[in-house]
Length: 113
Length: 110
Image (tube, rainbow over all chains, first blue to last red; front, side, top):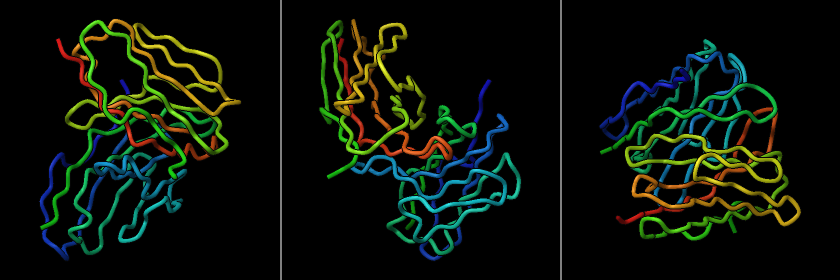
């Protein structure tokens, strides 16, 4: 069965803290994505990766970085968390090419105080 | 103007009603996805379309590439269909990058 897991369902951090969100998929997918979801704005792409050590900026990369050292794991890093980064963060993965279906993780709800 | 627009934003229906959610887009696409998100966050893919029509149980999705429009229909709606339905267009088949609509929140009352 297809599975994308995220390290935390809920997270509370303080302004200025460094935050790591981890995503792991067990489907040997090449593509992995990080999104944030906010009311009224829908899902917005932060970063994506189409191979190990490869990354590309999405629509809203400011304040975020990513790491993909292994094929199955894609990490999102908030170098210095700010209150406007309070959001739902969703990870997804898909096979390479031909626009395969994306499989989503359960999401991490992050609150930055 | 958003590149992917959904309508309506919110929809309330009585159990058993036929429901239609619309999606219009303004960019060239390789395919279009319909996704479902239940309370709690989990998103599942319902359909991926590049032409014509697909049916799965009580759900039907259609796409008109020339008109840049897709519809998701739910027949004989049920309270368990209550969810957010999201339209997403695939703009790059190599990277799988999607652009999302804002979602339609559906509530089906018993």
